[in-house]
Length: 388
Image (cartoon, rainbow, N blue to C red; front, top):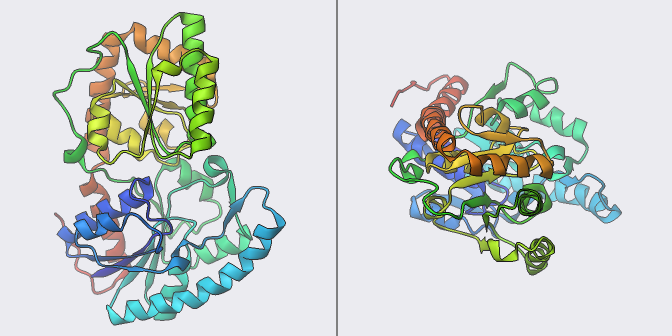
C-alpha cells in the first residue's frame, strides 16, 4: 500500500507535521510506503530525509482556504485566485500519484485541500485529517465555509484528533465517514521514568509553542506576576518556541511590568525537546483552545506535572488524577493553580506519575498507526489487514 500525505506548512517543530512524520515511520511496520507533498518553504524536509521518506515539493501545497476571522478586502480577492492556482497544481500531484502508483491521498490538516482535487483527478481514495478548531484556536475561518464542508464530505474518510474537535464538526460531516483517532507519540523518545521533579527551591514552568496570542504566553506571564504580588512566590518561566523581535520585546516588557523579567527565559526554537522537558518541573498548556496538545503528552511522558486550560483537547487529557486545569483565559485561576502546585509538591509527584502512565497507555505511535492503517484497509477492498 502506498499513501501520499499532503502537508500545508512542513515546519519541523509543528505538532501536525511531527504527527505526520511519526505516523509515516510507524506505518512502515504495516507495509505502508508513505510519501509526502509539502511546500518549497518547508524546513521539515530534513526530518523526511533523515527517515528516508520520499517527498515532492510544490508551493501550492501551502495554499489553503483559511483566512482571518475578519479578512481584509485584499485577502478576500486573493482567495479565488489561489483556489484556481491550487486546482491547476493538483494535476501535478495527480501525475505523481499515477507515476508512483499511490493508493490513498491523506490531507494532514483541515486547512489543506489540494490533496482532495489530486485524488479526484487520479481516481484514488482520500482521507482528511482535522487537527484544528479554526475560530477557537487560530482566530481564523474557512473561505466559503459551507462550500468547503461540502468538499470535505466528498472525502472517503475524515479523522478528528480529539473528542472536542469531533463534537464541533459532527453535525456538519457525514457520520459514516467521520472517526476519532488520537495522535500518537514516540514513547521511547520522551519517556523518562527515573527523573525527580522539584529538586531545587526554584520551580521551573515550561510553555511550548511559537510566541503568539493564541498560545497563551502572555497569560502565563500575567499569572506569574500575580503569583508574585498576591502569593509572594516566584517561579522560573521557560518559553520554548520561535518568535520575532517585536514579540520578544513585548514578552520581556510585560514581564518587566510585573518585576519578574529575570525569571523569564525565551529559549527560541528547540530541536531537542526531550532535554528541555527534563529541565522543567511543570508543563503549562496555556493555549486558549488546543485541538489536541501533542506537547502536553510529551511533557507528561517526560515526567512533568501537567497544567492546562480546561478547554478543547487539553480537557480530555488532564483529569483530576493526571494533572491540573485552570479556567480558560483566567490569569487569576492560573495563578491560584500555580500556587497550589508549589504548596503541594508531594501530591504533584503522584499526579506526574499518574499522568505519565496515562500517556503511555493511551497515546502511543503504535496505537495511532494501527487505527489509521485499519482505516486505510476499509477503503481498499484488496487490502489484507495486519496487526503489529
